[in-house]
Image 1: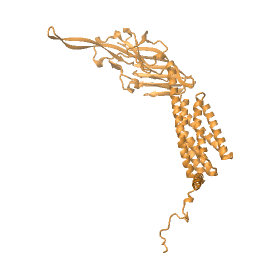
Image 2: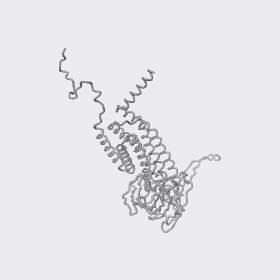
Image 3: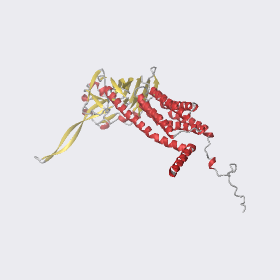
Image 4: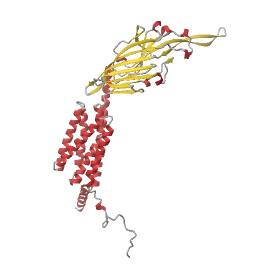
Length: 480
């Protein structure tokens, strides 16, 4: 009986301490917030899993429609002869002799001028709840070849096989190519076929298209030769070029309103069009890039010098949900802080279990947001999930705080907090600035509201302590 009485007294002391000690309530809140980080972390992992699934669906959409485009060319390919002498031994005559062998190699010459005039019609393409940016494009190409220069390799004119010269075009996304490739030079048209000997099986690898032999009169042996051709693609994600011209000019016009220009070279200028799209121009000189206008034996890998435009959907539903979930710690912490201030200022007791229920309701916001956004827009999902959680917590607060004054204040505070986070999620360039200013304002409000809280330090001061006396007077002698 005595043992039960002691336990009961201990429990009463603990409850009284938890009820009356601000430090205890703060510690309890901190532990609950840490505990709620576990389901919040699991929700963030769930968002990642759904996002990976979305990427898989987008890849399927792009594979069916057409992948990203990287194109450069035409390149003049001219064979030339070199000779190799080897010394051989004849066992029958016991003599050595020289054997001369002809080896055919190739020289590759880039255009003197190269112009890409690109028109892009882009649109979002959906499958189930997932969305990708796809487009159709026409790339009108023109330019000219200068007279090839073999002098750097000391190749004699009679060893150049002009009659077997061809043209090359390097490109990705052959599956998305929707037009015959036909190049016009000097009034004659040359078709192209895939060079299977160098074709790579990777999705975004560069395939090689090669023309038939060019008529000798169309080869720039004595004077500059102009050319033009056009390519039509179904594509997705991006369009990129490699500046192989001595002067490369690219013009791109599109109705897509969220372009992202990528690569090693920036636009010379960019303007918005009347339909909400853009018009961008690039000009790259041979002095702007670290490779020459010709290559002998093999073509170098020039992919790192690509530039162009990526057609992006700025923030999809999962990216927005992920950004919202990253503010989960802030939402839970600030909501608990509001309840803590109300509890401290009004002397209304709130049990740790009630804090836990409020925290779980705040976590449920994100599961509602993810599930609803998969079947609707992010705005509708955010609104529905936000209203549901705010109403639930407000009504639950009424049962805890008794009067409507405090629950209504909590509802308004949560509405302002969720609205503030929604604004941050929508912003891109100014998200950090707006978030920092908002948190500064919130900190100022908390400091203002909490300035009159009695933190209980006076109770810990020793009896007889004079608050007007900053230190003991050590110079006063002690009476014996």
